[in-house]
Amino acid sequence: YALGPTLRVHASYGTAFKAPTFNELYYPGYGNPALDAEKSRTVELGLNGSPGWGHWTASVYRTRVDDLISSVRVNGASLAQGVDEARIRGLELQVGSDLRGWEWTAGYSLMDAENRSRRSSRSGIAYYGKDLSRRPGQTFNLDVDRAFGRVSVGGTLYARDSAYDDLENQSELSGNVSLDLRGEYRLDDEWRLQARVSNLLDADYQTAAGYNQPGQAVYFTVRYQAL
Image 1: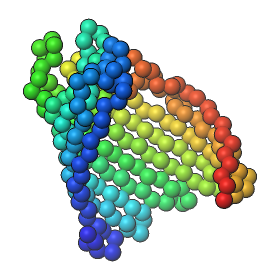
Image 2: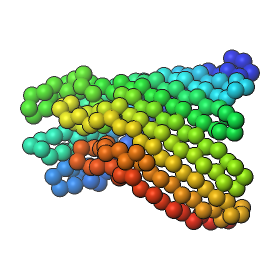
Image 3: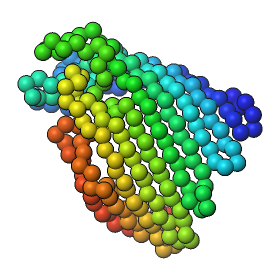
Image 4: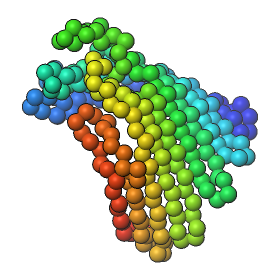
């Protein structure tokens, strides 16, 4: 709904489901054939503006998930398990503009992902009130790009808070900051040469325990797109 020429309010309600994957059902030592499909309901309310200097969006949301597919630790091994009930609520902010030819967009997310299951782990730890696994409470990203004729350059800065790897909240994954750089040269309307440096800071981090993310890497690409 338009509150004015540069301000709008939006609201939404949605439902969704997600079936368990083959690995989540049957992978040896991990799968659980008793898993049900996830079912969720989400409500969101927000404002977005487009003043003369750029654009911005602010929104809050609340999601309830039944039978959320996650994992638990048993004797050092990870096993798929459904969470009877989970509640996820959060705040998302985004702002962007064009500053002397540099296009930039920044985003911030604050999330409270809580386990509402009445079950307990095999070691007797109650799940209710614990954080859901692998969901950082805060994330931030900044994208900056600029074109100089046929040449364009840009970068992405991404930061995330720490999170727990398991439903029992016993194994913590540390937060991290990563920086990617990119560049492109347009030979013509169809051919482009692209280069990208991923994880320039060579950050050592994991988004799941035991699975290291790639370190610093350089990629070169020749791209053709027919008009």
